[in-house]
Length: 331
Ligand SMILES: O=C(O)CCC(=O)C(=O)O
Ligand SMILES: [Fe+2]
Image: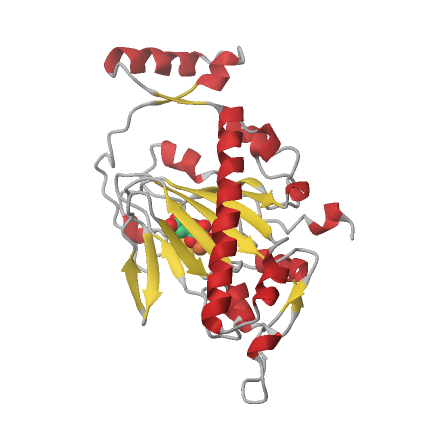
């Protein structure tokens, strides 16, 4: 199988960076972001007093913009400190036809509602699937941290898969075959604040497409909500705790015994929020379906078998919509 073809998991329409939108002094987000049926009533009050953000890259590049230099000058005079942003992230923007990089995922039509967030998505394992222009090009200390984190999370995931196989009385080799050479990807989510948080959604309700997700909430801002018995339950960020959730692949592999869970991200009125989700999926070159050791004449398969690459391409080809995608694989 040709790696370059397989590893382009799909694309997402280009939409503006939400961070950039949020930095503009706009009264209301473009209508593509407004989720309420009501006509939005937006407060004209300043949503937040924010420490100025200075684009140092523009200045370093000698692309000396009078206004940017003036912003630096004002920030130094009025605040005494500022946040140094560089346009570094532009180097990591999504390339045509690929969902990896800095941008958005799951945008498939100009009409659909958009999420009030930016994300950076990349495949981290197996190493030969890493896009040469992404992880290997990150600033060294960040890259080292991601690489170490990736290895630790692989080991945590494998231990978790094995425990689950034991609990399910499933043949542990079936888990190992699926995930030992599995694909690992990471999605960093950045949710800028929005003055009327109920009007927008940070991340549309969805279940995760992988088998297992290990989520790190990077700051204290609340935002993750899990749907339990029809209501949204907030997950309080705990210092040094991961949130682990079942994804669609594991629902299929366990033949529905472990359901994937619908969740969403909401935004805060004044605080930004950041999270890092690590997704564990089966070997990209293999296929999966309900584990044979869990099937019998009394418990026939509830889901079809499917190739992992086809499954992921199908996932990225649609907008997020609760557990809709999984339903398409039911027998
Ligand atoms: O930001 C969060 O807490 C949720 C992230 C998430 O659900 C995802 O990236 O799939
Ligand atoms: Fe998720």
